[in-house]
Image 1 (spheres, helix red, strand yellow):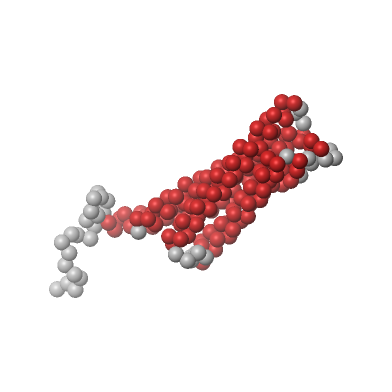
Image 2: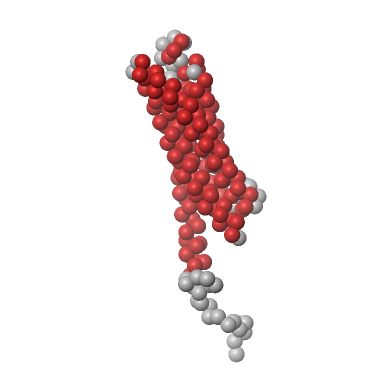
Length: 187
């Protein structure tokens, strides 16, 4: 006589509305849960690197003595520099949080749903702020490059490009965060 409770469905029967057995789908889900976490960690590392490089290139874009070849005289470049700093700080905090989560197994933010909302909202705000600063700085650089193609303009264009790569990394991280948030909504 078996002590297991009787069930009308076998153990590997398909879950309701699915053709995949329930036990198999859970095992596949466990294997797939680590992939988005690693991808998001890698994307945030790239965002950190690109925002650091954009910050350094923009902050050192001072050629000549003041005047037209100093980034601080242009509010669009100051905005781009400020957003690069914010993106760097955000990426640093999220990298440390993700590294802690992977190494210890628990998150610094209480509650999985709260952590998913924080990740998604933070990624969205920083990504859109970065692209906003880029869209302000790019036309100024383009206009100045038409007048004179020099090291100042080339440095500004390089910083804008690096900040754009940081935006791409954070934007892709936002896709993964949105996916994780949608999974939390289902639980």
